[in-house]
Image (cartoon, rainbow, N blue to C red; front, side, top):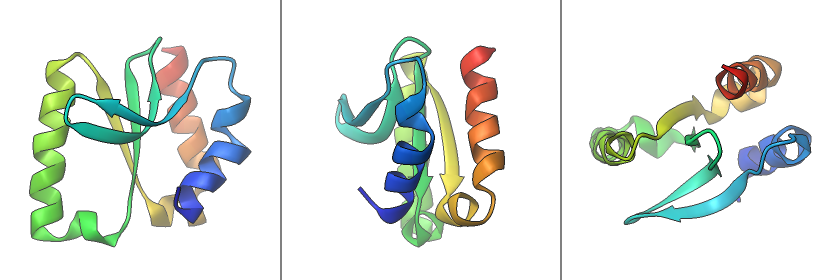
Length: 97
């Protein structure tokens, strides 16, 4: 796990009352976090995700996951570092709604 993934895991996701899987294989992809009961994937994006190839791969991946009825939540690593509480609140809102 990256530094940002560890932060999100240990300081938020691990304590949730729902089952959260880390580094879960879904089809041909490995997602950062997956909440099976809510069909939510959480992806933390480093700088490579903002380059042309990274964006195209993310679109393909997201479309595949969406075809399985999975909601994909993406957060830049910068948001984990600078707006951690807002990211946690957004994830929580998707879980409870």
